[in-house]
Image (cartoon, rainbow over all chains, first blue to last red; front, side, top):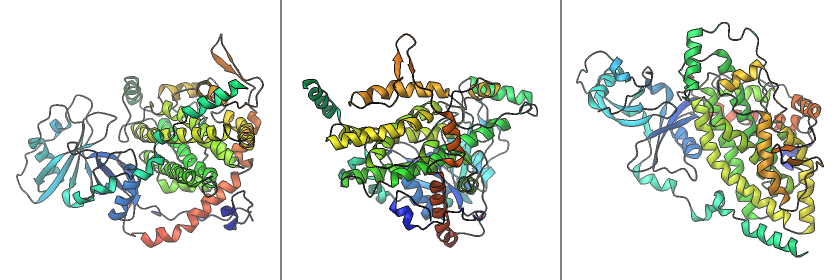
Length: 205
Length: 328
């Protein structure tokens, strides 16, 4: 058996010889969800990264742990399955991707879509607003006709509103940090006085 | 937390021959302008390969690094230290998730990366192949190994690949707590009883050689490392990182009345560089190739966790889902 300094490892009774390792099953690790965070009332949702999860409820829980823990302000969180996001082409700097879309918006309101814009390279997509359209292509055209664009948009993500899993407004207290959890902050570890006292004591000797 | 001195793959002389010269020039011009490369952009195969390797090693280091510290959670002195160490270990595991996600945007799935870790195909930071004998070892790791990691991570955060930089920004924000916590622990030991001081000194004596290995051997000047620097995959030489670490932390160790087990260690005031005994790179190579005190244990523990979690993943599996690469 593997001998370790850690009693917990010893209790695992791991055989010393390399245990034959079966390759992981395909999709053993679940599909991915894109995560968006709203940090303040007057700020839009912004993409922060991904999580792996078997369903959207668990994606939400993982996202909360991974992207909105202490020190990371959050008032609302949403997750969207990666495959439900329609991604436009990317434009080069200074060119607006919307200018490359051809066609006319149908004006139909079959589905509701949410639109996210990328304005600057290296930054992340931000929520722009909601449009009604008959399909994804139509939603891009609707967005083109709806939003004023002071700065060129480099890339657009569009997703059906029904595919978004978002926190309820009354759940905001999920992100309140408890007073007794200050031990997770750097500010709780001041020690300059201790070093000073130590040096003075050394000096006396 | 993370070790530098990445093991990059040797580049074949023909590595760039198959790349479209026009696209390559555009790619290099973009990096030159200081713009980030994003997942959907064209990139040379070599860039993709080396980045996957680097980010993946970094992610594995976070996971494996949690093991020697995790050992000490139940035995940390006092409730507050237990809480703090638990929070720190939880952070490290969270960092691994952020990093796996960044690497995934380059086209290697997370399950493949975890597979490569537990079969021993991928590397992780060599320093975690050493055991944490006492609480003082845990203090050393929390303060100085994390400090070394921050030196590396701050450099890499200025790199060229967007998703990796964004993950590192999040990680660095959390590391400030680790560093302060670790320093606080070491100060407590160093200014405590005679026994505590002795424990702390013994830990420094044990960990100093692996700490000097941490940043990796001096980079050989090669076309290879020049390209990685030009593409902003590698942001600073291993020696530059080691110098920066020594400059920031040796005085802080000395001010606590602790010593460093290298009689040649001193700052040359003319060159501004630290001089030290050349670390034993044969030992480094031996350990990184699997023959360290804890290599077997680290992988066995990780593999066991993976196998024991299998039933949970299987119970939750949705058989019809198909994997697609995440967006950004």
